[in-house]
Image (tube, rainbow, N blue to C red):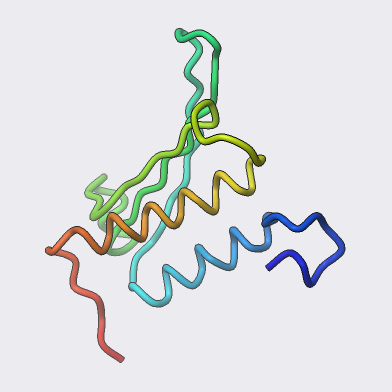
Length: 106
């Protein structure tokens, strides 16, 4: 991962983008990631939410196949890049758990 580039040993945005691209390609889905702010709680924090859709057309209809979320408050050490990579791993797990998702065979 990031150890091959001039960064810290943790993941960076390129690792996150590569992982998302590979998941989309391998599973035949479209992935969206959104950021939510939780201001009513103390302390205020950020929640990252990922959703997988069967296609762009399905995404427009707000029909998703799988989803995952990661809170920056409870996830422990690391920054945004680590949280986003964990988010994609959690999304992959949810896709695996959902039996209705048909993974294309190449």
